[in-house]
Amino acid sequence: MSIELKTEDGHVTITNEVIATIAGGAAIECYGIVGMASKKQLRDGIAEILRKENFAKGVVVRQDEENVHIDMYIIVSYGTKISEVAHNVQSQVKYNLEKTLGLKIKSINIYIQGVRVIQD
Image (tube, rainbow, N blue to C red; front, top):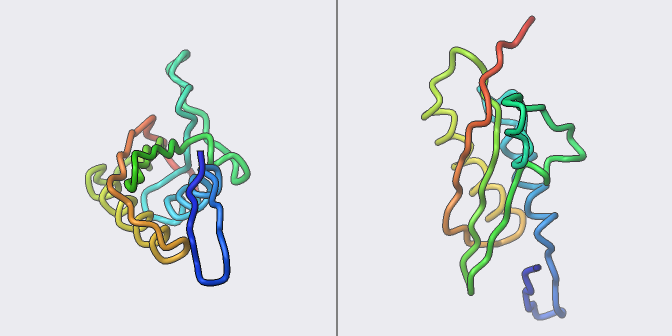
């Protein structure tokens, strides 16, 4: 699926992978985030951190009519308040997508896949 935008200069098509990559990049910048995790990773109970080029695997973009819904699978740092980290991710991702692509985001759902201790 993709989103079609009509501008005065022509048509713009934005794929879900582009939306997912921008959302993953915005999320990883937030304090308390160790990394993105794959949505299909619960088989061994170990969440693997995705590299930058694979952020789209940790984000699911769903569309219904005019609404865009985003599900994000993240790994947080030990000792951070999970509710605050999730709220910051939601705010940052929504702001970046609206600013960069001009999309109106209906919901951003955060799924915590793991907690990691960051070693200095």
